[in-house]
Image (cartoon, rainbow, N blue to C red; front, side, top):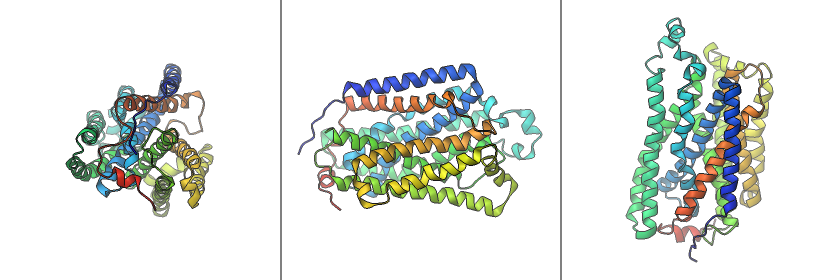
Length: 388
């Protein structure tokens, strides 16, 4: 069975434009009314957007480095989602201009009077901070560009050597991505409370990133396949592999989250425990309890049985839920720094709508230009013959 390229319907583009337009309008209005509050929402939007784009790129590299066969028909979906990576810097630009409003380590008088912050100035300073963010995005985008260039070139040449090249690049990419994600987590989230530290926080964000990229890929891949845009021959065993991986990553996130909490609770060091105390006061304790259910228990139960991992409708619903739960998690991580009491209104709606709209638009334009299936990949036929 051969792949036949079909353009996505115009309603996909219209949906992306509508969501992005409404989101952008809410963002502009919110910035006009309350710049500081919307700047915190901007951080949520940046880390949410970055995790989806980078998470999808990590899936591409994981396929190459592991030699996985079953995921080949879905790889272009991950490539298209990760193509939005450079736009992370668009989210960062307003924040670069408002750092003094967000990070109190940017104020020299505060730092000079604080021994702990004074000891961190070699890392926590504005030029290095901005340089790290730009550098991380650019380096990861270079990997994306090379991965996809080789993948698309292979569609025409059928050169198996391009796969071998990407396998070698993936081995280099994985530690770079891990370090880069850790920097993003420490810079944009942990440094909001610069006295707090957790040696496992980078892994916490990495696990959430992998899960976000996987959920976005799963939803897009299942939806596209149901409407005949992917390779013929994709079956429930392929779906099961996506569901099983999401189930495993959900458990991994829960393990890391609980490990971080347990180590800090057991040590009972004020500099560490104060961060959790903030999330147990002023109503935030309700959000903390709800987080356990929406981030772990509900998706865990939703994917627990074997049939649920193969059910396309269940996979799509759980994928959307996981992405919403990821946003909820970032809200819980970031907003207590802004307010000691729970805040939620239209201010918090702009960025999730804008992020989803932008990803849909980028995906639409990528699908218009390139094949949705890696037709030149030497493993493609084996992947279509895949059965558990």
